[in-house]
Amino acid sequence: MNSTRRSFLIQTAAALPATSARTSPDPIWDVHCHLAGVDGDTPEKRASELLRIADRMGIERLVVFMGYPFLADPTAEQLREQNDQVLRALRAFPDRLFGFVYLSPRQVEASLDELERCVRDGPMVGVKLWIAAHCNGPELDPIVERAGSLGAMVYQHCYLKITGNLPGESTPFDVADLARRHPKVPIVCGHAGADWERGIRAIRDCPNVSIDIAGSDPTAGFVEMAVRELGAPRVLFGSDAGGRSFASQLGKVTGAAIPDAAKREILSGSLRRLLGPILKTKGIRA
Image 1 (cartoon, rainbow, N blue to C red):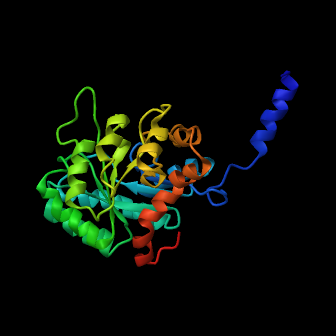
Image 2 (image 1 turned 135 degrees about the horizontal axis):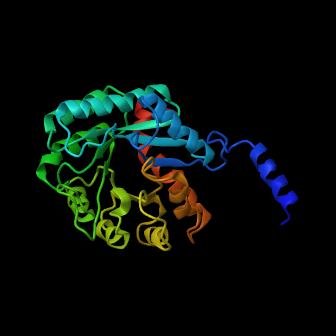
Image 3 (image 1 turned 90 degrees about the vertical axis):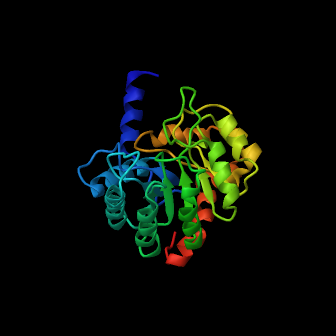
């Protein structure tokens, strides 16, 4: 390609409008986004920056959870402060963001109070659990039971690290234990455990558990195995932005050797179905 033609193509591409999430023929919903790791000195500015980049990738809706900075074992007061940051982002962009309330099994009473404040009485539609304690402990039962009664889905971070997990960091096997005790509550096995071949198998026999594909490097065979073993309705697109790029995580789906119908299911259909009941209850149109 000569320099004149290259310059023309670059100038033409620059003049084209960025892809808008609002006009994408195939909506994309991202189940895993953070305010941490994003530029901005307020929750509103950080959310705006997330959406600016999401618009370039044609992503219509983002689920946001946890404030900043990341706190592995937050106090009751810190849980409330982090959830307040997410609530501010939701108020600024109610037509683009969903919120999950950040809870901890080490703060059971405070977590139950936050469920009431943010989900029952507020705009949030799910629960986020991180690494304060393993999710298969009995301390989590009252939180998951209450989330289920409110129609809220539960997102549990989990990993299988070759170097060893962090203290309190759950594995997909822990998620399976939790899911079997609460078979009617929709639960997401975050990151598919990162060691996805083992993670997918660990939760395969738990029909109320889905995986998200967020966070890890794009690897051939990941999404294909997930669809083969679980079915596309149990696979959710997530990015882990701002810790990861939207583009690298979208590539896992768009580059997968699966039918287009399965890609559409992963990119929005699965999450829309899981959130459908609570969105209807709250009168949220999406």
